[in-house]
Length: 286
Image (cartoon, rainbow, N blue to C red; front, side, top):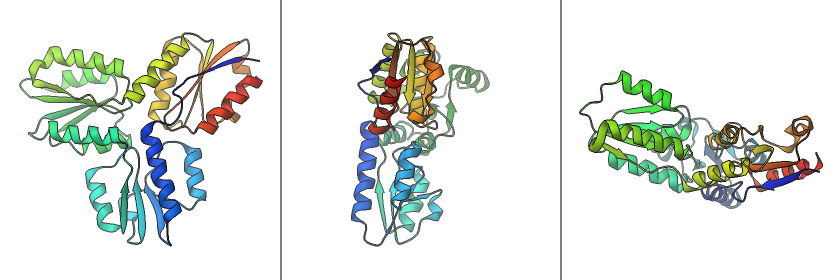
């Protein structure tokens, strides 16, 4: 039997828990109205399937909303234009945007109000990022790595132009700090840096790195479309530890753990506790 060391902060973060609580309340209180979410409420397929069974509809666009619907804005947030359209179409709109994401949106709006250009560290196709840049008054440029930032700095003549640096809330803080130092050397006082990375993200990442240094293998549990979950797996791998990302216990391959005596277990911020429990129980059987 393997020894399983489980991260203390694995699973739901505050923003996800709040969003699901709001959706549960809407489902329980509905009186003939159709409850829906605009996009995935969180990035976890098992949670999404559960709400689909409860009759919650997932809208792909604000244009799909109808007057008799009660619609919840997802934890990742949406763009300003989408929210305006949604409120114009629906009988009721509830905002479940994570408080940290909302804080980042408003900070970007304020910092760019005079037309400053936004440099955003994040995934361009992620819904949170699309929402964040919609709050920028000036031009926005997105990069997902130091290499992309270097290419951007070579390509664009920024000299003399004030800029704002921010990040998707679930990005790697250490990498962001390196980018901040690099940009501070180039822009000096013309650079405004917004601290938009969530503390819960930082704590989970630090714990994953610490745990990876104590075990022979790592298991990360969560949706494969979840950015913060994938980054936990990436961080564990950077420690040279064999790492697997699974959504459920059924995806565990006993062959992966052959010869492993101690395994670390963590999970993304959108992963329900019962799934982590199931993975832990299965690992102890390997």
